[in-house]
Length: 339
Image (tube, rainbow, N blue to C red; front, side, top):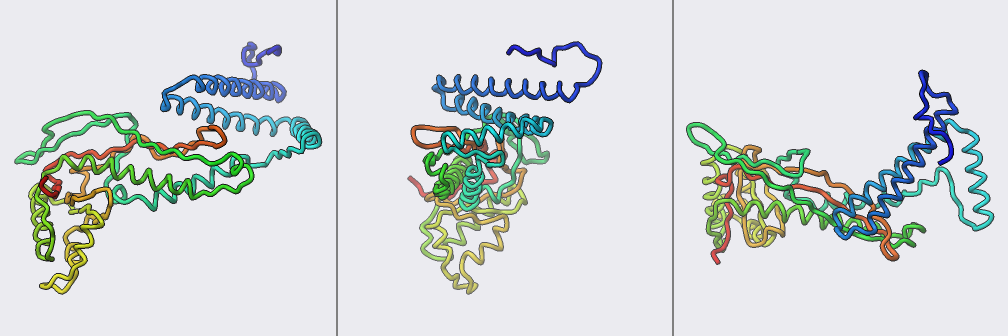
């Protein structure tokens, strides 16, 4: 760069309008330089997680270019006119049409909305549980002991698992707007499915009880009320249940003594929520749905990023970091068949 950097000139007064335009142009150069640097480095990084971070930062730098360009165009009216002339000359020579208000990345907003629609449709368990946001890659678990004095019996730290989901859309489809956003919707449904699996894996630390066949309505109610009674010995928090679709179908029987279906009877007891999830398989989980027993720790909110071109497609990646923090395993009963 041959011009003088106005930021290094000794001065005792603010920039003039002309100097401010120079500063902004310098900032744009620096951002372009950073984009090239990060993208070049990413090409030689084999670790996908690290590569993803470099490309994400490069994309953020492109946003910074847009921010500085917006400032420059506000100050430099001549630059606006010359940009338009340049666009016209390129259009005449090549047929490529560019507009200042082109929007450029409108497809990303469409895909993001479709993705989040899929997430909301797919989410089951996480919707009813207490949540805690942390600004770290790990979290502390205080195991709570109930007695004459409620106290923490054990402390341990755990890393917050990272959950990711990739999907791709053809470059040509993105350019002409013919892409199907349902691809993003499916990706959202799958990451919600992965959330359920991660959360359910932590429930395995709960107390085990035998799961019967539930051939009669009385057997269903008896087993679930027994589990509820065990949980209630530990805490007075609202009771909740996670159950598979196959097991849930057995709760649709009519209870002879009450004249109601079994699920209608149970809803009065499990006011903390009844979630039907195919991920729970041949188990039924009964627990106290209160922050003193458990919560979902969120280390990184769910976000969707455009990773970049790969062959003839553009790759997108969703990522989040979360885990179930189980503070009192005695307040969780896992009903399962004997192996």
